[in-house]
Image (cartoon, helix red, strand yellow):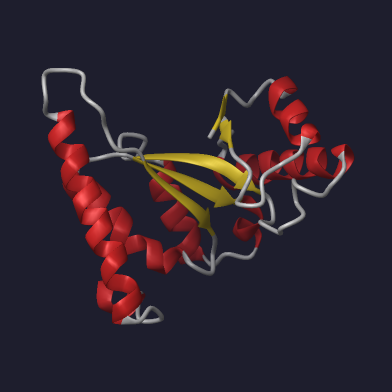
Length: 169
């Protein structure tokens, strides 16, 4: 159940998250029904891994129930150690482009992955990410965005010249 899945969060921590999400989903849903072009809310979730996906599940279930869209950043290396249940979950997100856009958030999620690393290391992480996604799901992620720590000039260069990446989140 949803209560079991987020049991690691205290009520104090979980309640504001759910309230914000419900408000955002309500606002987003009302804007999408409007005939005029109006501002809309973009739901962007970061850091999907095999260690936290069960906390994501109630939120992604709500996104589907409210029939809205969210973008989800994946740390791809987590697929190498994820169990079958996690793999099915990620596959379900990939198979539902109406509700979810999955993007490359990094390979490892380590703080120095893009911010304090050289061109060769970053290129290797982009290539490893692509290989894992192709091997596990036969999918190429078309968008990328470095994690909280940001990137450097090498990150920008790789994203700009990579023939498979089409967008920067």
